Length: 403
Image 1 (cartoon, one colour):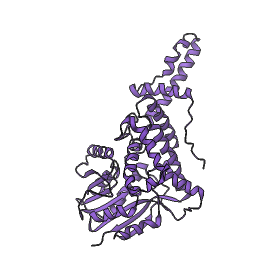
Image 2 (image 1 turned 180 degrees about the vertical axis):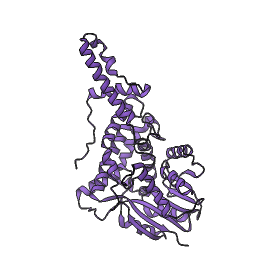
Image 3 (image 1 turned 45 degrees about the vertical axis):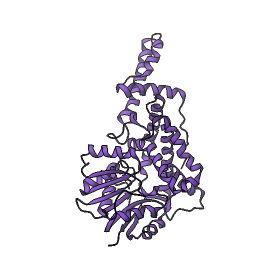
Image 4 (image 1 turned 90 degrees about the vertical axis):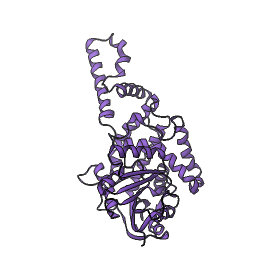
């Protein structure tokens, strides 16, 4: 597979034309073009036929671009708007510096390995990417197997509902969402199970977004969101009837540390299920291409280091859990989870052009283009990891706390 270049080549003429068009319809949502205003003088000197041709060509281009950006739109139409992209809790003028700081961790690997550095590292990452994730992907920041005849949104919901079904909780139970993000899984699980879900995320901006979405969905009575570090959770021992984490504990520097905290807050006999990011038995650490793919995933997703599939159960048992079941949910007969990334190539390019325009106009913070480009490149590494079978984002482990 060809690698995606780190820079997106756009000519100055293309930039000028797109900037003008977007400025026009992003503020007034009407189909007209800067093309006409810049050509008025020339129109007066052309024949009627030339003017008509020019007018029709410009109208076609303007209408096509309007449809491509505004009508076709991002994945989550009712979520974050492109014009509202921000740096989360980071002030707009500091987004570029924060992005540079994020990449500095990878230039000094020992900082990533230091456990005390990881929370700030992950918090910075989610400040940078949360709006882009929500705008371009949706409110559930995870993958799911493709399901024949189902949309990506429906497949995601089914994947989330399966998590709560596995921990076998009853309506009214109090369960924990470890690393809840903006709460997409939380809302699906609360609506499906009628359990009371308490989510924890380290990012303050995600807490605000999750609470807003909970209220809009009419689920704020079932969903509570807490800002905190899942390595030091502000909950008493034996206080939850069940727990789940969906592609979140991969951010922990040591898996047993977060598992130990989950073990502590669960009631005896309660179940915990996790979907983990891991390298599979097909991964060969001596293969340069394999290493490149895994390192690309780590850099683009704020991971202190991907674990192997055999590490998961070992970590769970180490803290006292009984392992009930373990399975890679990405394996056949499941349909590929990465097809959503491949099918979205046109959308990625469209969105990248739009982000470039917004940044140029000062609507999106400086540095947003770099963040979007990082995610664009990471999508290619994730796709390659899925296609080669060396990586899975959904290694499922179901555990029980002994009574």
